[in-house]
Amino acid sequence: MAYDLSNDEPLESALSGLHVLAVDDNPDTVQLTAVLLRHCGAVVCTAESTKEALKILNEWRPHALLCDVKMPEEDGVQFIARVRRLPGRLGSIPAIAITAYTEPQDRTRALSAGFTDVMAKPFDLLALVGALWHMRPAARDVPSEARS
Image 1 (tube, rainbow, N blue to C red):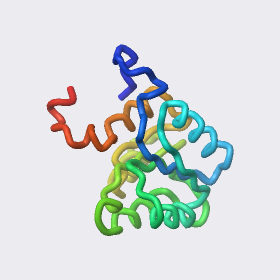
Image 2: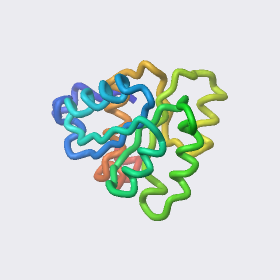
Image 3: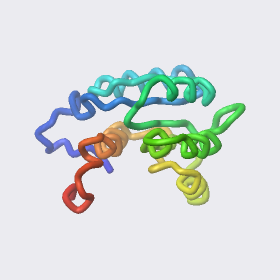
């Protein structure tokens, strides 16, 4: 779902106050993602491995998680399955899989493992902002029929 540019809210503040943990083993990709999301108002923390991401999750409580699917040691699907077993709000954090694998079975595998949404690489910034915008705590408190 792309961010609606007809919205009165400018793109630069669309994600204002949203805390996002971005996880990708490619340093350039994770840093570019962070810069783009910060430009949209998000507070972003980055991790270049799932081990680093778990440490961050123990210390910081993001509102949303972005995670590459294909990573060495532990892939994003294995990682989100571990996250879903965490207690409390952390175990239910909204999470978007970012992947170069775009076959239907890849999407099904990611969603079945616990991702909330799946986006293809390279991602469309407006679509990512739209998905994250709906993951804001205030948006999650509104009944889904009221969001349309």
